[in-house]
Length: 126
Image (cartoon, rainbow, N blue to C red; front, top):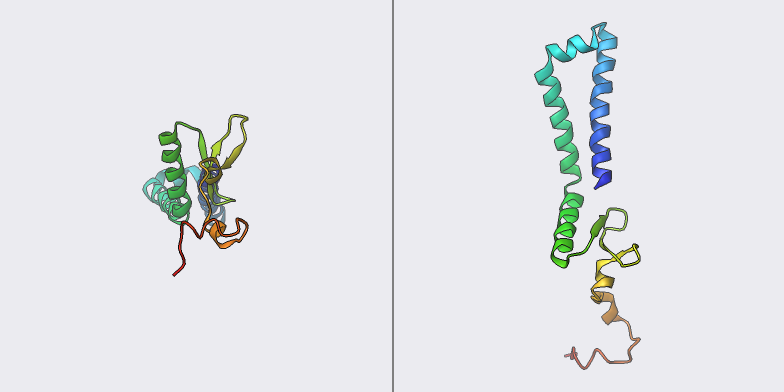
């Protein structure tokens, strides 16, 4: 989630730098331009924030989904954008994948032959 807020702050800084550059190019005072066109400056900032939110909508959805999973488990959770997974805090303070913490098997587990046919009893092959 911190990465999303970093993008939002960078978008705000980019809008301010562009306005400052425009004012320097035209020879207009920065603050007088801001107060004169306050509505348009505000609209530009909101458009940039909305564009960033739309670009990050998948990660925002996953982060909120992970938050509510943590609330239902009464545990601290976080969504890792880099790993693309929801992580839960262990008693030692480290974060592990929530699938590992809940002992959920991965779909690739059934493709391997490590158990020498133990899954074939539960999943018959036609």
